[in-house]
Image (cartoon, rainbow, N blue to C red; front, side):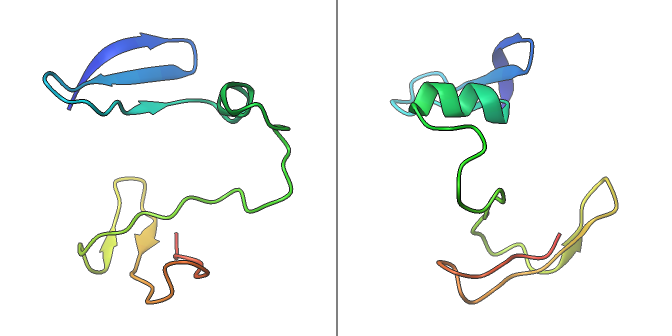
Length: 76
């Protein structure tokens, strides 16, 4: 994916012809956009669902799948 817009701690990916947008925000900006407290009361993690199997990312973190998508804690 190529970058459509980028400034500060925000990046929006160019998805020509798509009705769905994808952007990355800082925690503070995402909380502001959602109208919630940036500190929140829940998990500060992200879950990515896919079938990539076990792998190591470019930063050297090992990832593995979990079978409990709703409550699991993926390894990183």
